[in-house]
Length: 398
Image (cartoon, rainbow, N blue to C red; front, side):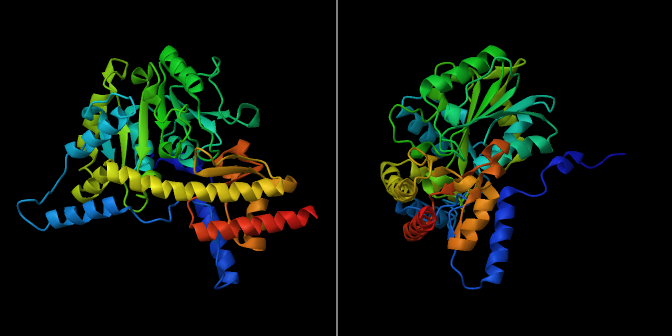
């Protein structure tokens, strides 16, 4: 009798970021005391903003008194936070009811958990280069995967192909790792395709707060028809520095139905069965993000990360190295110079100038030949890394 999920044997040997960690660990063991300029994993470097910290402290104090103590929270999220998020969407012209917002422990968790709503016989389409967890979560479930490659020819923003059949469509915009952002007409093509074929879009909006261009959509629900074909998953990790605090949210419209089943009602049933909710303290901190003061403060931090991106892009411009992203997204997708493979460039930058990035090959086969820089590091480290990159490749040019 088979008792083990053998689909785990189909996964790649190890996770991309685990490989990076192992290589950097080995380097530091050989070069103790060396400072590395880490622009690989997209972890934030700035602390939580003052509005959030104040709310967290107040929530901790609430837990110290019988009259204000909170035990189990509602599994789908505290009403005060669900309402704050719905209002946030409303201010951008997207009408949601608070019952369509589900509070989660983060987008990464939710991207895996949401697959409970879909039969394992369904097919998932992943636009690559892609966040590796999209593929791995579906491999673990034994689900068939269609890999849709993108590249410079379409700005890493492919449109649906009528000959491609899939039930679940992963779309990340702004994209990780390429930094590309779908324009409304491009995203509309995917919405129309999903409604026509009966597919469901899983829209990863983890980086929406980095969009500056007013013509670019922050949410898929800005598009007509999206309420009948899409689920949106978002995170406060990069928006507000919650990487170590863990909080996100998922939007499932009440109109979304497939096979006579309502997906909003299904997710209520799932959450009330499989979770005991996110802690009161963390949700109070999250609600502070959506206050006017919280919004002002988080965008001050985002501006610092955007300045990091500008610093790196300036260095690459001076070296004549081609890249994508960096403007409406926190990632820079650099073309590997000198015909290097992405892992060759990783080793080269690590050993020559102690700069750590992410090899594009780890985001899918079509990511080979590219390299991702995260702009979430400290301004001081980013400035020094940019200087080292500029010096290294300028010297090579001569």
